[in-house]
Amino acid sequence: MIVPIELVPPQPVTYDITIDVLPPLHFDTNVVVVTNPTVAGHHLEKLLSSLSATKLNVVTVPDGEGYKTLETVENILNECFEHKLDRKSLLIAFGGGVIGDMTGFTASLYQRGIDFIQIPTTLLSQVDASVGGKTGVNNKYGKNLIGAFYQPKAVYIDPAFLETLPPREFAAGVAEVVKMAVMFNKDFFSYLQEADLSDINTIKEMIRKSVELKAWVVNQDEKEAGIRAVLNYGHTFGHVVENETNYTTYLHGEAVAIGMIMANALAVELGLFTQEEADEVKALLEKSSLPTSYVIKDVDDFYEHFFLDKKSAKGSIKFILPQGMGNHTMIADIEEKTVKKVLGQFGEVL
Image (tube, rainbow, N blue to C red; front, side, top):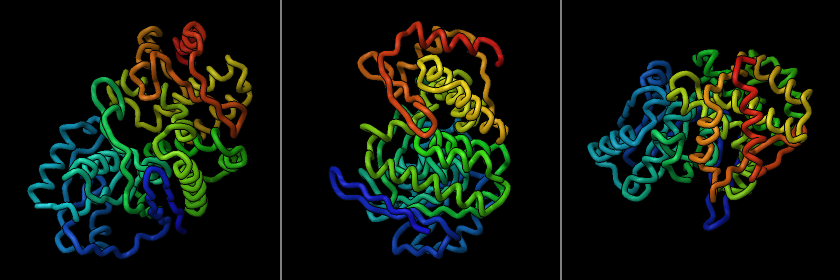
C-alpha cells in the first residue's frame, strides 16, 4: 500500500510511503547507503540485491544513540566527499531512527542539500522516525537540539526487516504506536489492547494505521507549529530521562514509555485524564514489556531540564497531555509546584 505525503507551504513537496516488499530500485546517479554493522550484518545483502546505481558505496557508522552526534555526521560528510557525491547524488538511510536522523541531516548539509530516501528497519523508525522529515543529532544539552526539517524523496517500509529485530527493539517501536493511539484515535487504542503483536498480519495493520495517522498529522503541520507537536506526547519527560541516563540505559521508545506514564500522571493531577485511563495505558505498555517506572533522584534538576527542550519558549514549557483517550491538549504555564508535585511521585519505584 502507498500512503502519500503532501506538504503545501512554503512550496509543494510530495512523496510516497510504500508499505510492501522492498521493490527493485535503480538510480542514475552516485548513491551512498548509510547503515550500521548490526543492520548490515542482517540485511545489507538483501538491499544490495534490490539496488542499482551509476556508482554505489556503503558507509557504516557505529550502532547506537550514543553515536548520534555531529562528529558522526562529519564522518558521513567526509565519506560523501571521498566518494565524490555531487548535487544530483543520493543518500539512502538504511537502519533505525538514529541512522535515519543522521542521514537526513547529512543530506540537508551536503552541498546545501541533496536527496535522500528512507528504508527503515526497526518498528520505531517504520511507524514514526522515517515519516515526516525530522532530522538531527544529540549533544550534551539534550536530544535532537541540532537538526533540520528535511523531507526524504521516498520511504520504503518492508515489514520483513522486523524478523531479525530483538524483542526489546520491537517493544520500543510499540511505544510510539501507543503514543499515536492515545493522542488521536481511541478505537486504535482499543485495537492495540486486543492485538496479537506476534502475528505478522497484525503487525502490518499496526504499521499501516500508525503511518496513516503520522502522515495525516505531518500533512497538516510539517514544521511543528501546531498539531504535529502533539506527537511529542511522552517525549518532554522521556528526553530528560534519556539525558539523565546518558542515552545508554534506555532505548528511545522505552524512555518515551516512561515519559507517557509521567505525562499521564500530570494529566490526572489536572483532571484531564482519569486514573483508569492512565492505568489502561500503563497496562498496554507493560503488555509489550516496556518500562513504566523511573526513579527521579533530584526533582528540581529534572524540572530544570525541561527548559532545554525544543518545546520550551520564553521561559515556559508546553506540556502535551491526553485529554480523555484519543484526544489531546497542549498546556503552557502549568504551575511549577504542580509539576514538581507530580515529579515527586516518581521519587521511588512505583
